[in-house]
Amino acid sequence: MTANPPQASSLRTALRIVNAVLERETSGRAGFNVARLAHEVGIDPSKASRITRELCDRGLLERREDATLRVAAEFFALAGALDHGLLGGSRPILRRLAIEHGASARLSVRDGVLVRLLRAESTPEQWPARTSLVTPCWCTGAGRALLLDHTRDEIAALLADYELIGVGGPNAAHSAEELVAANDRDRPDGMIAALEELVGVSS
Image (cartoon, rainbow, N blue to C red; front, side):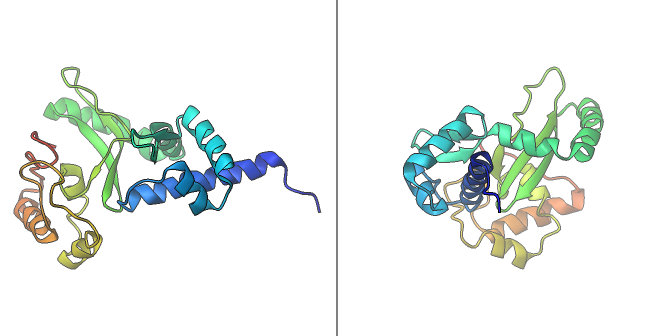
């Protein structure tokens, strides 16, 4: 039996590292630094340091100011490129909506309690939204829209392990009950009004 080449082994380790960082980020807990990541993945810290440095150089991971790691924009661009039908087909639709309504049109997906922006189209007068943007689901228009078909119990279970107080703008939901009430209020109009929920502006 032929042994696996070193390149294959390194690639598998790099994928395990990215997956560990992504799972940690989507859990809502503090990110891994290199030492904790090495322990989580089960590899030598020096090897973890080398591979994470390469992943950061390639734009797949990035280091925060507190030295913890998070998945970077290039990872989401690469992942999005794997589904040409969804992203490619969405561009003309989003562009038409942006022009017709004079507002940014976005394609977002929910990943646990996080909302990931995959594509955005804006009018020339607007600042373009940064793709790969990650925001909370309970205090953004896209996040609340993606929860409109969820029951009260499903939303309570989703947010059970998260502290909502202190996150978001002055009108952000501070509990699952407040989030459910906000969606019940907006559902009849078929439009989410997330004014000053993420920050001090509409989202």
